[in-house]
Every structure is written in C-alpha cells, then in structure tokens.
Amino acid sequence: MGYLPIENYGIIGDLNTVALVGLNGSVDFMCFPNFDSPTVFAALLDDQKGGRFQIVPAFTEMKTKQLYLPDTNVLLTRFLSKEGVGEITDFMPVEELYDGKELVRRVTTVRGEVHYKLLCQPRFNYARSSHKVAIRSDYEIIFSSDGEDGTVLRLSSSVPLTVDNKDAVAEFTLRANETAEFLLEHVQRDHSYEKNFKNFITESLFQTMNYWKNWVAQSSYKGRWLEMVNRSALVLKLLTSFRYGSIVAAPTFSIPESIGFQRNWDYRYTWIRDASFTVYAFLRLGYAKEAGAFMGWVEKLCRDIKDQSRLGIMYGIDGHVQLKEQVLDHLEGYRGSKPVRIGNDAYRQLQLDIYGELMDSVYLYNRHGEPISYDLWKDLAKQIDWLCANWNQPDEGIWEVRGGKQHFLYSRLMCWVAFDRAHKIARARSFPVNGKWKEERDKIFNVIYADYWNDKVKAFMQYPGAATVDASSLMMPLVRFVSPKDPRWLSTLQQIEKELVSDSLVYRYRPDLAAPDGFASHEGTFSMCTFWYVECLSRAGQLEKARFYFEKMLGYANHLGLYSEQLGFEGEHLGNFPQAFTHMGLISAAINLDKQLNDKRNKSTNGI
Image (cartoon, rainbow, N blue to C red; front, side, top):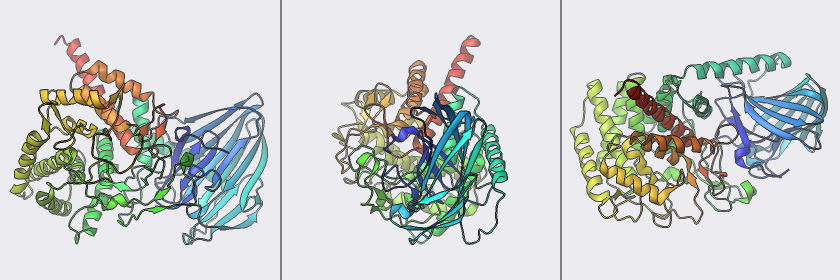
C-alpha cells in the first residue's frame, strides 16, 4: 500500500493514547491501550508487517481531504470523486467521559453511491506476537494476542464482517446519507457489559465533540492566530494522560530525524523538560487543571524517588523509570530507516537543565494556579540541595548528545533558573530557605558571563571554548536571565542568525562545530527553536520581522496545523509526530507576539 509521509496524518485520542489516521483513510499507528503500550497498528513503521485499520472507497480516481471539526479532536477524512463523495469520521471517546478504551470510525456517503473496502489487521506486541480470532457474529469479531501483552480487541460493526487470514475484512455499499459504523475496543477482564451499538456511537460522538469544544472555550487566549493556537492546545491536551497527569513528548517512536540514518528515538515518555514546558503553555492559556494534574504526578514521583540522589530526566507515564532501549529488528522502519527502537537509554543520562524547567513550572503554578503543598516543597528543596553540590558537572545537555558530556551553556542557564525560582517560591510562601541557593545562583550568573562569553565573536557560546553558538541559548532572555535588548544578547542573536538561521528556520546547533552527538546524519531545522527565535525577535522589539517569520513558520504546518520535531531540506516533517515541544513553542511565541503588537498599537493610538 506504500508509505504516507508523516505530515499526511492527523491524530485522534482519548487521553490514554492516540491513533494516527492517514489521508488514505488508514489508521497506520496506534499504541493500545496506553501511550507506552505496544502497538496494535504500526504500518507507519513497516508497510507489510506493522498492521493497519483501513477503510477506503473503491474509486478508480479520487482526491482526499482531512479536517478537524472546529475546536475538536474529531477528524474527518473525505474522499472526492466523479463517482461519489464519501467521508470517515474518526474519534476516540475521551477517558474523562467513558471507561472503555475505544476507536470509533463512522463512514458516510455524502453524494452518489459508494462501494467501500475495510481491512482491520491488528499486529500485536509491536508485530511480534501472533493472535487468535473468534467470530462472535456477522457483526462482531474478537482478536486475542498470543503474546505476553495479552491484549484482546473487539471489532463491532453495523455491516457484515468476514475473516481472511486472521484479519477482518468487509465490502459494503452506501447510498447518499447512509452510514456504516465500526467500534474497535480494548476488552478487559472486567468488561462484561454490552453497549447499544448505534446509540453508543451517536451519543459518544456528540459528547466527545462537546467535550473538546467546552475545553477549548476555557482558553484565556483570544488574540491573533487563534485557530493555530487552539489546535496546538488541543494537541498538547491529547498528549496528556488523564489517569496520571503526565505528558508525553510525542505519541510515536522511531520516526527518524534523518531519513536513512540512525537517530530514531522513542518519545512516548514523560520528559521532565518537555512536560514542564507544556505546563508553561497550559498556564499561559488558563488551563490550571492540567498544570495541577502534572504537579500531582511530580509530587508522587518525588515520594517514589526519596531513596535516590537525584531526579531522572524521563519516566514512563505512570512514573516508572526502567525504559531500557530495544531494537525491533523485524520492522523495516519508516521509509526504510532502521533501527526501529523502543525504550530510550537516554533515561540514564545526566541533564542538569531539567531542574530549571521543573522549578520554573512549579513557580508559575504556585503563582497562577494553586499554592503548592508543603510536602512537595520539602521534596523539591532536597533536589535543589543536591543541585547545589552538582551543578558544575558536565552533562549530556538538552539535545541528549551521545558523544560525550560537556559543560553546556543551556544546562548552566537552567541551573540558574532552578535556584532563582526556588528562592522566589520560598520568599513568596515564607518557606524556610537554604541560603546557599542564592549564593549558587549568583555564582552561576558570574560563571556564564566569565566562561561562556566569547569577546572575539561577541556571543555566548555553546560551552567554554566552543567554536559555535547553540539555539538553546535563545532561552536566555525568555527565562529573564538577560534583557532581550541587552547589547551582549543582541550580538549573540546576530551570531545565531549568522550560523543557525536559514531564511526563517533555525538549526539547533552545528554538528560539525559543536559537541559530537555520536551519529552521522543530516540535521533538519528544529521547529521549536524557530518559535523561540520569533519570541526573541518580538521581545527585542523587531516586531515586523518576528511576525513575518512567525507567519511563514505557520505555513510549514501540515494540512491540519500539526508539526513534528524537525523540518527537512524540502520542508518535509522529520522526527516523532506530533511534537509537544513544537506546539508549546508556537503557543508561547503567539502569545508574546500578539501582546507586543497590541502594546505597539495602543501606544500609537494614544500618541505615545
């Protein structure tokens, strides 16, 4: 059937997991029932072995189109032909409303008489396990994994189903305004009730639509680019676990950062860094409930790691730490890019910046959400005490290089943030404070100006003695370490533009000049860094340039407003998809740029 580019997919989800639905009407990726569960569909990673759930009209020629129903995560895939028009409505009833874990597909003929073909071919346990099939009736089939995962799926249908080589198949014809409905659900041992099938489909569709519309309506943002900001918020919400409050970096694994190379990672976990940035975005949009749920996850995590010396950089969605990396040799990979990896050995790495992102999110939540508990404060204070003795170590840094540790500027910067925000929280709440925090904060401040500033280049460098700047230094004015109009910062920004900016797009670093990452590959531009760059421009008062670049970047989104991690030479999307980092960056850049534009307009109107 052939690969679709990753940008040709939309996503739906239930706050437990997501499914990727292609423009061809095929669900080609779904981990089930949770984000970090094994896949049941993975055609995205192996067209022949991975498994899919496809429904497609038997047109000789057709055009396809995808759209979300406005302000929802309900996805429509439309097939247009001279022979007729058909569409599929895909959604997953959200965990907050329904107990079950379900994928609903409703097929409707809009015009003409359309013949459809269905293929449901689950491949359990990352396509490593065989399965059994039980035919309960012409309208119900049970798939049971033979593997240790023990997953059981039930496919219910309003049209007759048959079995071909352990796959469910069907052919059916619908005239205009006729529908066919399909429900794929996770069957658990305590799952004994029977649904009224058609009533459930209709009821869950409208309740799910209303859930998403009501959620979007709670956003405090009413400014420019509202549709793109709302879509990014909806993506971030889809990447949030309702059960645990944790937030995954992306819902996929092993979508390569470079086609044909080896930078293929599993992002279905909660990075302290990524999740903390997402909390910033939620708080800036007024979603204190989601931020509070993450704080609850952090509080439980701190209780669970009391016997350990430090916080890990990433965890499973339920807080487990063992994320051992494995290679799935039997899968050929996205567009032939091997190896296909699950798990992520980077969990062993030392990345000191995570303390800064976490403490900044706690600071903002304590200020704009709810006051944090004393017990959480005590646990966080122990982590900051550990940081006092350890911030001056080399680490792998934000980009998780696997080629050796360095004293990265970004890690030092975020350690400064950790001490600064911890001190501010203590003052605001009158908590007992370790006087060494302020001492270490000021020490780092002086170290950055003394060791990272290159007077010849007139820029803050990636690490002491480095030959290049790093796009992560774009965070310096965003975390209020330096004024966005400080001469040293403006000259650093110019050097970043010279080395790392291509038109409006930003590379995260120069691998040929920077710390080696242990892999030979052709790096794409890093979309989050592009949004950081826009925000730096707007804070520096370069509003026309910032708006121009921001709106150009909006044009690199896929047809649904979704972004992966990176953009390739031809604008193709690279890396896991969709990426929380990118959508968080878009929200932050939009909010700041909108405010700056409004301030400029108000000054002009008032004659200032």
